[in-house]
Length: 188
Image (cartoon, rainbow, N blue to C red; front, side, top):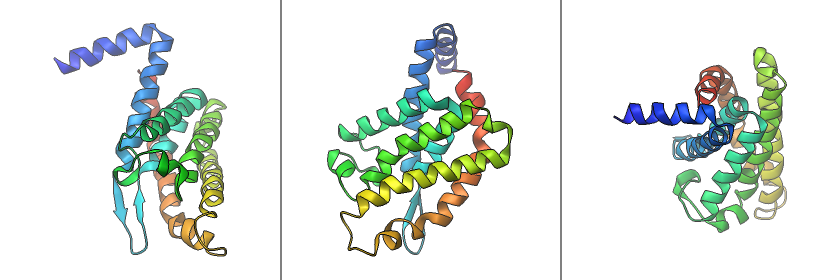
């Protein structure tokens, strides 16, 4: 029964580009919300799956739908839905120490989406390079906002260094998962 409903929804969306865009956006935002709740504890910080979701969306959806999905994700969280890492929610999260990273996800999705739209998925190295550049831009947003909350001189120690290895692993993982994700979203 459920498969028949999903199949009917996919057939309807395939005939209607706007419906397909909306479906991709909603599923994308909720995929990031789901991955945000998955955290791997390390000795220093918990590394969530949020940025992995953004990487996958950017590559799989292209610029417009990926940016829309990230804006919807931020709106969901701002409205109080517990979609941010650790089940956090609210405008306070966006205005707090980690809010710059969340806002940076929009830029990250845009960069990855543009790279995907221009065909960088044809090369693993181009995909990895795009993922690293997009992640660096997200860090720029995050570190800028974090600098208002931590003592001067500790921004990199608190907001970058503990996350570098995890984000490199997520970038490589996303490049390995991008084609299945791309095929999934293109069927919507």
